[in-house]
Image (cartoon, rainbow, N blue to C red; front, side):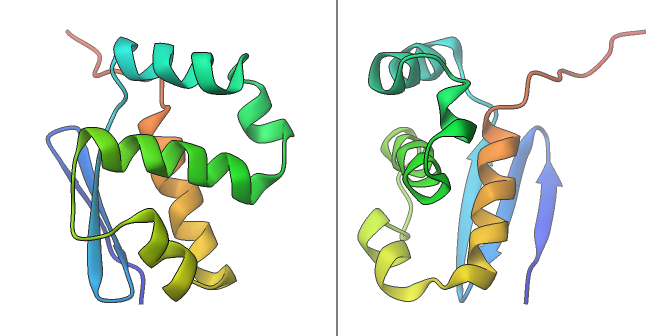
Length: 100
């Protein structure tokens, strides 16, 4: 039911019959999130669903896909919440490839 692919820093998360393509956030996107929620620590401290939706909305804004916030609210259940959480974690990851 859940498929996750990592392709060149971009990860694809499958939810129901749709793919969510997520790239690691740029500094502009982090700045935009901070203007919306304040401290990024609040993303995990506030209500989890609202936090996830704020970040997913930003992902969709900068990388339009067939999936929308309304589609997520109307079609996803708590089993899909885990996948959305993993997508947000990838988006907010601070890890970058180590150069040798």
